Length: 272
Ligand code: NAD
Image 1 (cartoon, rainbow, N blue to C red):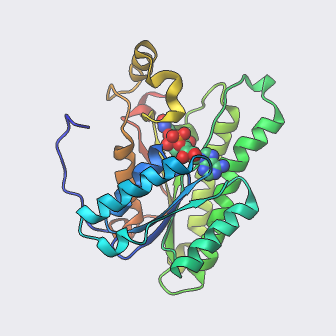
Image 2 (cartoon, rainbow, N blue to C red):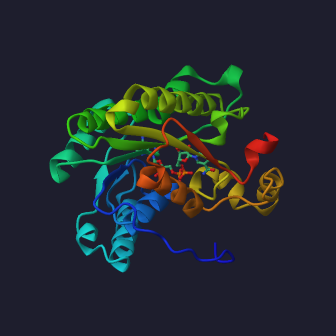
Image 3 (cartoon, rainbow, N blue to C red):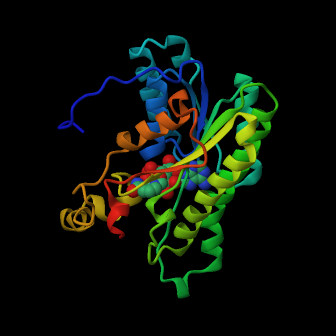
């Protein structure tokens, strides 16, 4: 990011309370920090390392403090839950609501993938991926929507999809199906609750420099191979995805629902 011009970050999320799943690292962490910078109070969900979640918490507090949101900075928190576990996901949303008394933004970001040829992909593994990427997102969305419906003003959901919502990813059958499903979930929920003050959208990143891409991001030749397929000629930074999540959660997107924004350096223009 250092060779790109600095931009002034707006304060569009002041007073909003946001729960971000899978936010201990990668895109989710960048979203938490961006939301904190824009004034939101954030709950950073994690399923594994508490240490990484605490690092995101520190960065979010720092970002809020620097942007002048000292009250918000004191209210950020971390919250452990495996979103693939229905009871844990519901307890997480309950916990946040009990703590804050409100939730304005849900970001379904947690996601996993694994590779195997489709004819050899085990159904147990298929279910594991779908459970986190799709069912987990639906369970969290249901809980958030019940809250949004219970109060004036509604709320908003932003899902983390993928270019593989549209472009098939050979060897990643469960991941591709989960993201295709997430795109349809986005549109279905958007339509169902459009007249209830609830907006539901998705961001579909392309190749972003996070741990999910460790197979190629730290290997120069492999990275060059990936980047050669991207019209803009480079992989993306998590911050470039977080800014789209901030836009969609903000009132700048007040007339947008049911949409997926592809943030992928033009990848979808070529196909994979
Ligand atoms: P990442 O592996 O760094 O982050 C994934 C996050 O999800 C981690 O914080 C992980 O702990 C969390 N997570 C995994 N399983 C969980 C569970 N059961 N419960 C709660 N949290 C869980 O990778 P990332 O790139 O930051 O991925 C974030 C999202 O972005 C995913 O949904 C992924 O599919 C999507 N995405 C990433 C790319 C990319 O190129 N990096 C492209 C398209 C879409």
